[in-house]
Amino acid sequence: MSIQINAAKKVACKLKTSFQVTKPSLQLIRTSINDCIVVVPTYNEKDNIIPMVTALKQLPIPVDILVVDDNSPDGTAEIVQKLIERYKGLYLIKRPKKKGLGSAYKDGFGFAVRNGWKYICQMDADFSHEPADVCRLLAACREGADVAIGSRYKRGGKIEGWPLKRWLISRTANLYAQILTRSRIKDLTGGFKCFTRGALEKINLNHVNSEGYVFQVEMNYRAAKQGLRIERLPICFTDRIRGFSKLGKDEAINGAKQLLKLVFNKNIHKDSK
Ligand SMILES: Nc1nc2c(ncn2[C@@H]2O[C@H](COP(=O)(O)OP(=O)(O)OP(=O)(O)O)[C@@H](O)[C@H]2O)c(=O)[nH]1
Ligand SMILES: [Mg+2]
Image 1 (spheres, rainbow, N blue to C red):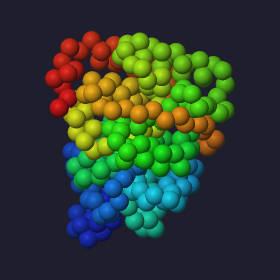
Image 2: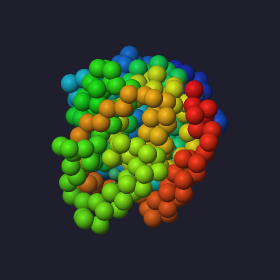
Image 3: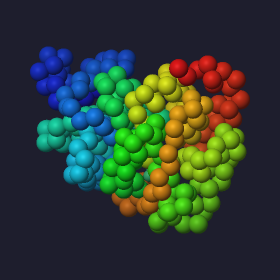
Image 4: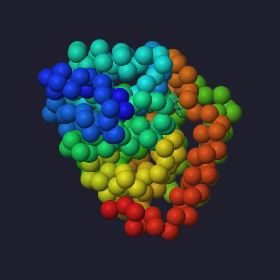
């Protein structure tokens, strides 16, 4: 597996920047001191990644950033590699091929937990999530929530730029997930959240199965099963302006099947810590 090592240049020189390892994130070294890291998965986000990193680095609260890229053909990882020279606390896990959103988050969260960040946020690279809202999610966790979820469907939340069809698909998917997982959370499929490290340890990433988009639902389900304090904050979600969506029909069908498997897995309570 190929991995780009950032920041720890001496180590990188010795090991050469690219080499074979089984778990890319095991080789990445923490070099910053902020207590919050924002994990951003990317696949072909060359037009979004510079403005996104810049916006996150300009937040009034200092945060570190971890980009998890799946060897994007458009060179997103190479752009991040250059940004690493400019920004402290910017990390990159480069994986050899497209392995799915959930799998990217598992690698990213794993790195964050092992390296002691206290608050771990997640968001898309395409500006559907407003970077400034990271501060609100983080504040909710600092004030006692185990998990803070940005919700499009909570009162005060909204979606801008979606055609009716897209909105209907999302609402149906969420209703399906809500019924199956018996959750009170209306936006189970959203990907803008903040976890405390303790919450991720309790959820136990080793037992999270979802490799794709259904990861978002599985994390909420497992968080609720663990009795974690989940707070929902209304957010404004804006349809992406640059780049293309990677969410296809197959992904949605597979996600629906995986969710069925998850909720009928009797061992779910034992699975997590
Ligand atoms: N590393 C990695 N990132 C991914 C993968 N699939 C999607 N992403 C990233 O995950 C984030 C969400 O993907 P999007 O394609 O925007 O999906 P979405 O937000 O559900 O769909 P849209 O609303 O149409 O944009 C983006 O930052 C993508 O670049 C993947 O397989 N691997
Ligand atoms: Mg998107």
